[in-house]
Each structure stands twice: as C-alpha cells, then as structure tokens.
Image (cartoon, rainbow, N blue to C red; front, side, top):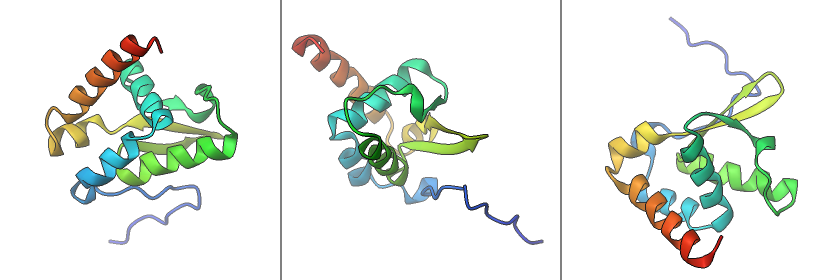
Length: 116
C-alpha cells in the first residue's frame, strides 16, 4: 500500500518521538512565540495565523510560527486558504509531563507582575 501524495501545502512537522526538549525550550524562549502559545492554550482550539495581532512584521510572524512548528510545539495545517495553528499539547504532555503547564503558569505570573 502506498502512502498518499504529499501536497505542496503540507507543512513538515517532527513526529512525536523526534521532539526534543531543548528545541521546545528554545522555541518558547522568545516573548512573541510564548505569546502565541499562551493564546493557543487559552483558547484550546486552532487559530489562524491572521488571528494573532503581533507587533512585528508579517515575515517575522511567519518565522515565529515556523520555529514553533519545527520544534513540535504547534501543528499547522491549511484549511482552505487559512493556515490553522493548534498547540500539540498531547504530544508535549506525553513527552514532558507538566512542562507546558508549568511554563504557561510561570508566563502568566510574569505577565501579571510586569503588567503585560
């Protein structure tokens, strides 16, 4: 049996077993990327790239999403013309139990302390 042809719009993602802690931590070390992840976690559903109103250029936003996707933090898929983003919570929680919740909690406490 052959696998279906990969569309040119399919984006590469690491398999669960390929996700590395240092890549996840690097991806989440940037304030804009952490902001994206916090928003995805709060909504608990997929959001389009255009939903995010980040104070950076469109090309920089695209870069941030690529870093998150390549680290295995988010999954991106096209739905029509929209690129949808979903947090890979199940994969991250399975590989690194408690890490995502601890990071999100720490980010929320920091945002409260700094008035963000």
